[in-house]
Image 1 (cartoon, rainbow, N blue to C red):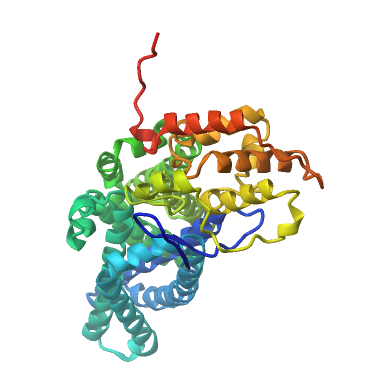
Image 2: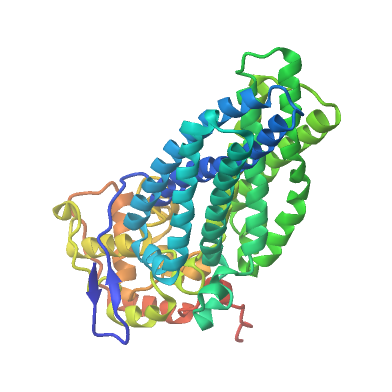
Length: 477
């Protein structure tokens, strides 16, 4: 990490990896969806196993013991192995994509992270202890070991949930910097309860898949499936919890999912629609009509649950825009308090890292634009791949590019304000124009002073406040 000095604050520059045509958010987002789904399966699975252990030791279900052993083997193999791999992969990706955000999260909540890791270690030890020795233990000790595993897994969620929800609703932490004010933030409880119910739902659906693979007759499978379906009943609370969460997030975040961002609205529809289909099938088919679900249908419901998780996680990440930590860091890891200084000096004046294939750019102005893109834009965009600037802005006229970049937070309110000066706006506009033209070997530098003065005026008109804070002013006549 390099530090840009000479301002009222120190501005860090990190080396940034290039993922080519793949948007960086897609890398960590895709991995995060798998990780969240598997982790929630592990939490709900522990609860379900405690329930089936109780059924077995009280004689309420003659096949509960057989299911418990089969189900837990899958739980261990899937959640521990894949969960551990994707968890490490998320940390590895996050520190490359958004190191400043991760650094602030760890620095602000290091003792919370330590507590979470303690419970995670306890979860792993309890899980493997049961996997290795559970078959030879008496019922009471089996239950105690499963309960220990379940509590450890749920408390791992408890600690993580506080940090993740803090990113969107930091609450009193912004002024007090109190760990507990940030941890027990406005969206903490609706998010925690909702995730707990999702965990139970995923566990029940995967249980139905596992039951259909067991060597049991139809009556035995039906009995186990209906036992598992009890864990789907709390889905009835999801609409109320979803509304509670919706009302707990900031007003501008609510506006993104109500039409302000088409992508977020569509993904919210995916999450709600998939959850509704699962809930209706669970209520009508499994709980009321007591249907016996086959393996194909159970697998389809699991796929719907995965789709709901994907849509929900996309929306949860998206509604933080234009921030990665609300009011503290923008999505490009630039702090709001740093914007004024960067507007004066230029955002990449202190960036010490060379460009990849630097000689491939036709002139110094386009090279400057590439550095500006890397520092300010590359976390959410590519140049010509996923969410590429050429696709988004290539059809604009040169003046449209200049004005829309200079007034970025008004062009798209869920984007952060442009953090550089007029020279950098022009350089970024020229980079997009050169890319859209097919990257010719020569490209004339644009050095019109009047254009730079116009861009500077646009930057001043846009200000440094986020787009959601801008209010329409009456037109002067």
